[in-house]
Image 1 (cartoon, helix red, strand yellow):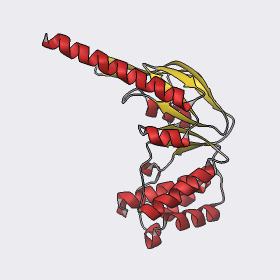
Image 2 (cartoon, one colour):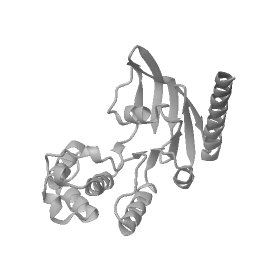
Image 3 (cartoon, rainbow, N blue to C red):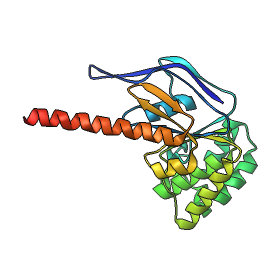
Image 4 (tube, one colour):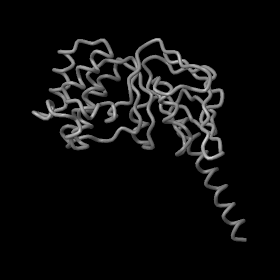
Length: 232
């Protein structure tokens, strides 16, 4: 379970303020796949970072009864100066898992061959993604965070990745940010809509999608009316 209590976050840039979390409260159930929906710039990724603990809120807190992953497949989780092997052993030490077991898992899953022993800075973007996804799947978390994860590798590797991730979701929860309604409907059962710093939780993902799409339609209508008024 992840409990969000009175979470507040505001960005201040060039004399302007942008509120992405305005006293947000929510409880994300255990072993539940939850979609976070919102327009571009609404603060979805910031909310994910605060849940992950990589960004501090201005006030409030996030409490978890279990372990939470970093964003699945995030290539930035690997240090470019270290080899794939060194990165894997470092992650194992940070998360307190058996180093040799994680090395065997990531080396076999990522299919990097001898590149696994070379610095990550020499990897292609696809190789970095394969290493990152292998690291994400090599550790069992109670909740996985997914922030617009993209397809990695060829069709065979993608299918293998999908199969492993779906297997993880049989025992773990997920918090997912995506603009793909198809992916959200396939993977998530519940959802929350972030709009103007407020988070509205729905126990039905279909209700969350409908709420999100209604917001978009209203915002597009307001934009068109402003354009017409300016032209008139």
